[in-house]
Amino acid sequence: MKKTYYLFRHGITYWSKHKIPYGNNEDTAEILLEAKPVIERLGEYLKDQNITPDRALSSKYLRVLQTTAIVSEVAGIKFEIDTRLNEMRDENFETLTERIGGFIKWAEESEYNTFVLCTHGACLAALKHLLTMGEFHPGSLYDYPSSGVLQIIQGKEFKEIDFNY
Image (cartoon, helix red, strand yellow):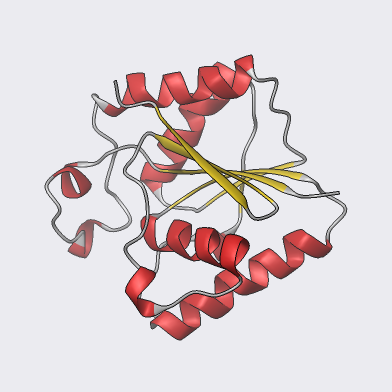
Protein backbone atom coordinates (compact mmCIF):
# COMPACT_ATOMS: atom_id res chain seq x y z
CA MET A 1 0.00 0.00 0.00
CA LYS A 2 1.30 3.45 -0.93
CA LYS A 3 1.92 5.80 1.96
CA THR A 4 0.19 9.18 1.85
CA TYR A 5 1.78 12.35 3.21
CA TYR A 6 -0.09 15.62 3.83
CA LEU A 7 2.57 18.28 4.32
CA PHE A 8 2.25 21.93 5.24
CA ARG A 9 4.36 24.77 6.50
CA HIS A 10 3.71 26.72 9.66
CA GLY A 11 1.53 29.82 9.43
CA ILE A 12 3.11 33.03 8.21
CA THR A 13 5.24 34.98 10.68
CA TYR A 14 6.60 38.51 10.59
CA TRP A 15 9.97 37.10 9.48
CA SER A 16 8.62 34.79 6.79
CA LYS A 17 6.29 37.50 5.49
CA HIS A 18 9.17 39.95 5.09
CA LYS A 19 11.69 37.28 3.98
CA ILE A 20 14.18 38.08 6.72
CA PRO A 21 16.18 35.60 8.83
CA TYR A 22 14.73 34.61 12.20
CA GLY A 23 18.02 35.13 14.02
CA ASN A 24 17.45 35.10 17.79
CA ASN A 25 13.69 34.79 17.19
CA GLU A 26 13.95 31.21 15.90
CA ASP A 27 12.40 29.69 19.03
CA THR A 28 9.89 32.43 19.84
CA ALA A 29 8.54 33.56 16.45
CA GLU A 30 4.74 33.52 16.46
CA ILE A 31 2.32 33.27 13.58
CA LEU A 32 0.56 36.45 12.54
CA LEU A 33 -3.16 36.99 13.11
CA GLU A 34 -3.63 36.98 9.31
CA ALA A 35 -2.38 33.37 9.23
CA LYS A 36 -5.34 32.00 11.19
CA PRO A 37 -8.04 32.04 8.45
CA VAL A 38 -5.66 30.36 5.99
CA ILE A 39 -4.79 27.62 8.48
CA GLU A 40 -8.46 27.19 9.35
CA ARG A 41 -9.29 26.62 5.66
CA LEU A 42 -6.52 24.03 5.43
CA GLY A 43 -7.92 22.33 8.56
CA GLU A 44 -11.44 22.40 7.10
CA TYR A 45 -10.16 20.67 3.99
CA LEU A 46 -8.56 17.90 6.06
CA LYS A 47 -11.80 17.56 8.02
CA ASP A 48 -14.05 17.61 4.93
CA GLN A 49 -11.88 15.00 3.19
CA ASN A 50 -12.08 12.79 6.29
CA ILE A 51 -8.30 12.67 6.58
CA THR A 52 -7.58 10.51 9.60
CA PRO A 53 -3.82 10.17 9.84
CA ASP A 54 -2.12 7.24 11.44
CA ARG A 55 0.44 9.76 12.63
CA ALA A 56 0.24 13.55 12.81
CA LEU A 57 3.66 15.00 13.58
CA SER A 58 5.22 18.43 13.87
CA SER A 59 8.39 20.27 14.77
CA LYS A 60 8.78 21.69 18.27
CA TYR A 61 8.93 25.37 17.33
CA LEU A 62 6.27 27.78 18.60
CA ARG A 63 5.03 28.85 15.16
CA VAL A 64 4.46 25.21 14.23
CA LEU A 65 2.73 24.44 17.54
CA GLN A 66 0.43 27.44 17.02
CA THR A 67 -0.35 26.23 13.50
CA THR A 68 -1.09 22.66 14.57
CA ALA A 69 -3.27 23.90 17.45
CA ILE A 70 -5.53 25.60 14.89
CA VAL A 71 -5.63 22.51 12.66
CA SER A 72 -6.38 20.37 15.73
CA GLU A 73 -9.24 22.63 16.74
CA VAL A 74 -10.79 22.61 13.26
CA ALA A 75 -10.06 19.07 12.07
CA GLY A 76 -9.75 17.18 15.35
CA ILE A 77 -6.26 15.96 14.43
CA LYS A 78 -3.90 15.69 17.39
CA PHE A 79 -0.23 16.28 16.66
CA GLU A 80 2.85 14.88 18.35
CA ILE A 81 6.26 16.56 18.30
CA ASP A 82 8.92 14.80 16.28
CA THR A 83 12.24 16.66 16.43
CA ARG A 84 13.31 15.13 13.11
CA LEU A 85 10.93 17.72 11.61
CA ASN A 86 12.61 20.68 13.34
CA GLU A 87 13.93 23.68 11.44
CA MET A 88 17.27 23.38 9.66
CA ARG A 89 19.38 25.05 12.31
CA ASP A 90 23.13 24.92 12.83
CA GLU A 91 23.40 22.02 10.39
CA ASN A 92 24.59 21.69 6.84
CA PHE A 93 22.69 20.43 3.82
CA GLU A 94 24.04 16.88 4.16
CA THR A 95 22.94 16.64 7.80
CA LEU A 96 19.45 17.90 6.94
CA THR A 97 19.23 15.38 4.10
CA GLU A 98 20.32 12.53 6.39
CA ARG A 99 17.83 13.58 9.09
CA ILE A 100 14.86 13.81 6.73
CA GLY A 101 16.00 10.70 4.87
CA GLY A 102 16.03 8.84 8.19
CA PHE A 103 12.53 10.10 8.94
CA ILE A 104 11.29 8.88 5.55
CA LYS A 105 12.96 5.50 6.02
CA TRP A 106 11.21 5.14 9.37
CA ALA A 107 7.85 6.22 7.91
CA GLU A 108 8.12 3.95 4.87
CA GLU A 109 9.06 0.93 6.99
CA SER A 110 6.38 1.61 9.62
CA GLU A 111 2.93 0.11 9.81
CA TYR A 112 1.47 3.61 9.36
CA ASN A 113 0.01 4.59 6.00
CA THR A 114 -1.20 8.18 6.37
CA PHE A 115 0.86 11.02 7.76
CA VAL A 116 -0.01 14.67 8.38
CA LEU A 117 3.15 16.72 8.92
CA CYS A 118 3.62 20.38 9.83
CA THR A 119 7.18 21.63 9.53
CA HIS A 120 9.48 24.23 7.98
CA GLY A 121 10.54 25.18 4.46
CA ALA A 122 13.83 23.29 4.14
CA CYS A 123 12.28 20.17 5.65
CA LEU A 124 9.36 20.40 3.22
CA ALA A 125 11.76 20.73 0.29
CA ALA A 126 13.69 17.67 1.47
CA LEU A 127 10.51 15.64 2.05
CA LYS A 128 9.12 16.54 -1.37
CA HIS A 129 12.27 15.73 -3.31
CA LEU A 130 13.23 12.59 -1.39
CA LEU A 131 9.70 11.15 -1.52
CA THR A 132 8.94 11.94 -5.17
CA MET A 133 12.39 11.69 -6.78
CA GLY A 134 14.49 9.75 -4.31
CA GLU A 135 17.13 12.49 -4.23
CA PHE A 136 17.65 15.99 -2.90
CA HIS A 137 20.20 18.51 -4.17
CA PRO A 138 21.35 21.83 -2.67
CA GLY A 139 19.71 23.72 -5.54
CA SER A 140 16.32 22.46 -4.34
CA LEU A 141 16.72 23.67 -0.75
CA TYR A 142 14.33 26.57 -1.35
CA ASP A 143 11.77 24.55 -3.32
CA TYR A 144 9.09 24.76 -0.66
CA PRO A 145 5.62 26.26 -0.61
CA SER A 146 4.45 29.37 1.13
CA SER A 147 2.42 29.05 4.30
CA GLY A 148 -1.14 27.93 3.61
CA VAL A 149 -0.30 25.43 0.87
CA LEU A 150 -1.03 21.76 1.45
CA GLN A 151 1.20 19.32 -0.37
CA ILE A 152 -0.10 15.79 -0.88
CA ILE A 153 2.30 13.01 -1.82
CA GLN A 154 1.15 9.47 -2.51
CA GLY A 155 3.82 7.24 -3.96
CA LYS A 156 5.54 9.45 -6.52
CA GLU A 157 2.37 11.48 -7.19
CA PHE A 158 2.44 15.07 -5.99
CA LYS A 159 -0.15 17.82 -5.83
CA GLU A 160 -0.64 21.12 -4.03
CA ILE A 161 -3.72 22.93 -2.80
CA ASP A 162 -3.37 26.62 -1.94
CA PHE A 163 -5.63 27.99 0.81
CA ASN A 164 -4.36 31.60 0.46
CA TYR A 165 -7.48 33.19 -0.96
